[in-house]
Image (cartoon, rainbow, N blue to C red):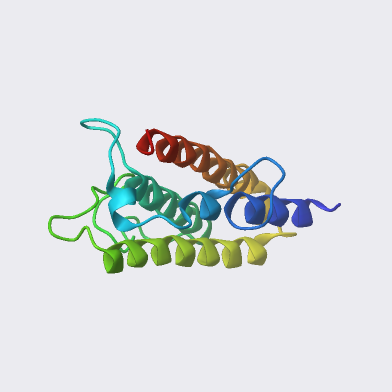
Length: 152
């Protein structure tokens, strides 16, 4: 298998394609209501909603680095973690919108990756590309754990 094919396969499996290791990031958040996504295991602990946006942010950050984009151009103000739900917005439309943001950032990063695979830029960014895939798998595991804790 060529490096280009392996990179895209790893990237896709970590987010959406069928995996052997258990749920990927999309599967981990599937079926959750806004109320469930907003549940916290304790004070000052992140919830599933925040983990979802955190993953979206780092997909954006890697894409921005590859494309040479301007810092601070993410659709949400801030970086890394975004408090959710916002006051008065713990509702299904807000949760759906943030899940769509994750999906859009994934698609945008995938398109950027496809453009640089097989070019000299691939080598420069390869570690970050597979890193963002591993980041998805890591947070999918965290989310699955939060779902189990929530059901206790």
